[in-house]
Each structure stands twice: as structure tokens, then as C-alpha cells.
Image 1 (cartoon, rainbow, N blue to C red):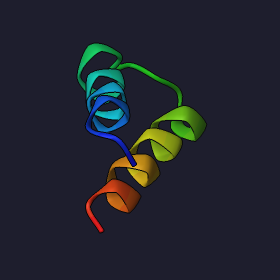
Image 2: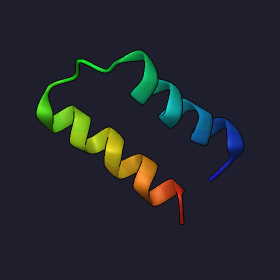
Image 3: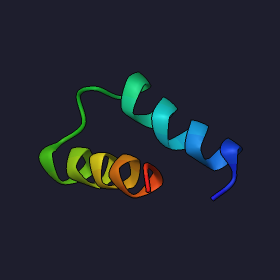
Length: 36
């Protein structure tokens, strides 16, 4: 993935800390995948 996309995932997690469980899991999953 591109650095810009990685920043987007990170920004989503930082800017939207009050997401519902499903969305929070999606964002965490995205960050987990980007780490590999």
C-alpha cells in the first residue's frame, strides 16, 4: 500500500476514536494489515 493510504488509515484511527465496535475493528484490522 502507498504511504498516503497508510496515513489515511492512521488518521482514521486517531481522528475517530469513538467509532462503533464494527468500525473500530475494521480500522484496527487495517492498521494490523498495514504493519506487514
